[in-house]
Image (cartoon, rainbow, N blue to C red):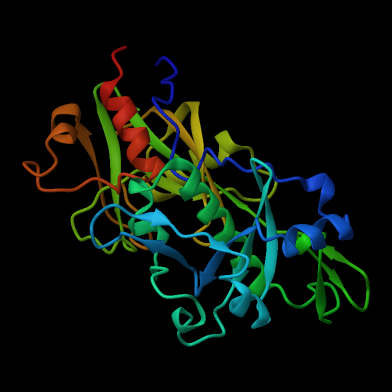
Length: 309
């Protein structure tokens, strides 16, 4: 099987930000950026992002000016520098302590929504920035204590690191690598229906987390065998996608099957079966649905479908 190239960037990629990692420990630079009237803030409330236009089907990110965000910043929630957008500082702040954060903001600022519901409709740069903010704030709000000695941690590097106040251990945001793969055999692909899917008709690619001491290709083969009993040979990298829901990076592959018999793990899947290209092109007629359009799973399927060996 030839390597199938990615037809276009995945959702949540293409950030316009310069992350200025080399300036995060410059206290004067960070203080000036935070105080600047030009700075922008992407607030996060209970893992939701501030958006307007969702109801009309034309969502857009709402980045607050420093003045508009003054109240939420003064509320004392975690904040961090995301980077510079054409020289403009962009921060994020978590305002989850407020039962309703909207009264803290000027009128007409939109509302907080689940980013996953609209990311496919947002400009790539906006989706990427909001995903960045969501993932970083998820880590900050859940890593207040040292994993070494249990004492309190304090933010460092403009909110992009934490340091223990007792033992001095440094902690950095974690990203859990997960492989996601479309297993193919000739003109058919293997899709599964997970026990965790809220959509009762959706079939998607297989996926799983990479374990310690395991290569990506080994993780692909192990996960497919564990979940479906199908043996996999060659694995071809396709693309990656940040997936901060809450803290993953999805590493996409097309994988060649060496066997076809399916024996599912009932703890992971309700069903798994081979689908023809025609069934994938007309899922409703075949009685199933495909994964959401902003997912790398959908991109893996679509690129395989359109690829002509």
